[in-house]
Length: 121
Image 1: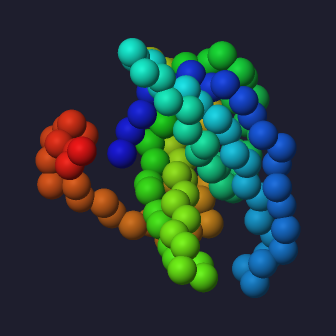
Image 2: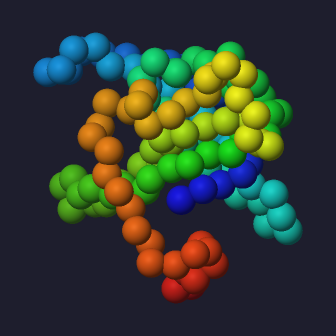
Image 3: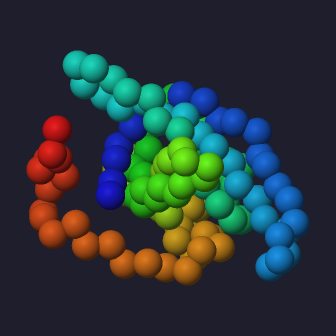
């Protein structure tokens, strides 16, 4: 999935140790454009956490995956970015966040349509 939105807030970096070594993640809050703007919390993983392009007010093109999981009868959904770049597609020398920075294995996603406008609601 892809989204173009304005960066509203950059939250502190979180880190820890896992079975595969040290991990880092950072949440950012973006706001969509339109008649009814929505704020969305998006998680970044890996080496591009804290990237200098993450300046509040910047317009970003974000490619992401949605993932939900159940815990104690409740469902939790993550929005995990696998590519973030400044809107307009210009990257400075490879700056930005890409899937290679994500510690999870790559998973192809086929939504069966050419546009994201066929939502059931």
